[in-house]
Picture 1: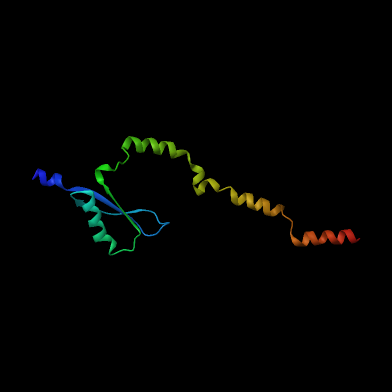
Picture 2: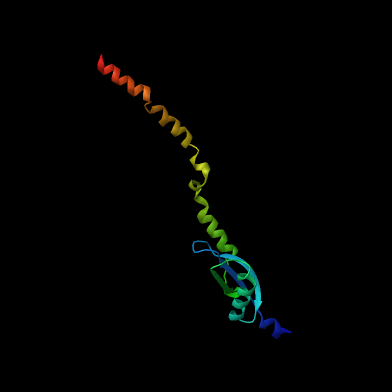
Length: 117
């Protein structure tokens, strides 16, 4: 039973629908090797969807962040308040001040009358 369990490996299948589209994870599958995994992915997925590319990756070759790495990255990225809309709350007041200082059409035309006198 242990040999059978070791025979199959988990593969993750990714696909892309267009040249500018991102790769998207579709599903996981069990296969004895990479070639068979690709064939299974093509049979199960490409005949249903219009895709231009399919990637098959062994799950054991993928790496995800550890909790310590995740905490370190979130602390590093924590000072990005300028990326949120809250950081731009003062802009409405700035635009009001700018618009009040702008000249309107009536004021500009009144200058012409002053010069004639």
